[in-house]
Length: 524
Image (cartoon, rainbow, N blue to C red; front, side, top):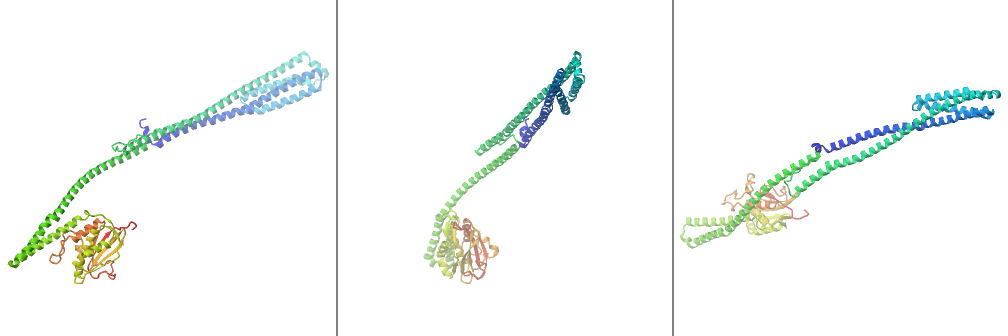
């Protein structure tokens, strides 16, 4: 019985349903048998015994009329009594024929037939020895028949008829009582069977209700309480129900899921703790970098400015006393101090991307481009460069950083120019969910093998004697674009739209830088 609760719910209902079906089958068989027996008893009583009793009553009346008519005829000789005698004899024959027809369905048929034969024989003997003789006698003979001896013979014969009739009537009365008892018992049994079927229905309903309560509602409520406890934060609360088998399996799966979630949660918590530690460490590192940036912008650049200034003053005051070698050394010192200042300034710009003033807002790209061109105005004019652009959209960006982006890209296009006058074109086109920008020029170009290297910090493809710079510009561009959620790459010798005939696009090999930025309008 301990394992009965682990039965599948379908097995519970199958067992209960089988028991109910078996009980209904037995009750139905009892009802069918009882109905058959009751119908048979009723048919025997109504269709056979009661008609037979009526015929016996008619027969008794006919025999009585015959006896009375014969005695009256013997005393008076009135023919009317003889007509009554003959009519009563005919009625007797009709009643005997009706009784004979009922014998085939009569209970205790042999005994009733024997009693009927006895009655028929006694009646025939009475008529033979007395009734018919009186009816056939003339006026002279009727006086002899009225003598005491013949009257005594007629009385004995008629008493035999009455005895046979009484025996037949008593037998039919017993049969009537037996059939009535069977009929009453049949109805009682039928009522009891129907009541039993009703009781089976009630018990089946109660049984199914108990099964649902025991095997469904209580386990579901138990599992619901356990799940509620887990949902309220008690993650160590085990989920387990014993019945039925489906809920037991379900609770096992849910508990296994709970254990996996708890294990993952613990691992996530540990990872979160580690991330928080790393974030704290990163904040400390950023604070140190901020301190370093402050030192670099003030404490380091001030000595460099002094070195450059006093070295130049030394050259101005004592230049006529120095030889060419000394003046060359002074020039090297001033140039190194200035390059160090420029390097520190670029490093500061690189470190500030995404930290200081880095909020992204919708803005028109033409605004930071115009700022960059204004900052580069003297270089563009000196190089005789031409800068064209498409109609630029709005993007989600930072004006200062996008100005640095355009200033570095256009500045490089002007700086790394070929023998021709620099021509620079800023293009744009839609690329899926983003805007793809390009900066194309007709400069000296970049070899394909250096396409990735140029975006690394401090990476230079040319010596300082050929082109000035610190090697940070393109690395700064990459950092700015990635901070804006885009990417940047280089296409050598490709105009903005891939066709050399576009208005404003430069011809020749040159260099094309491409980058993506997110749209700045909500409906884009």
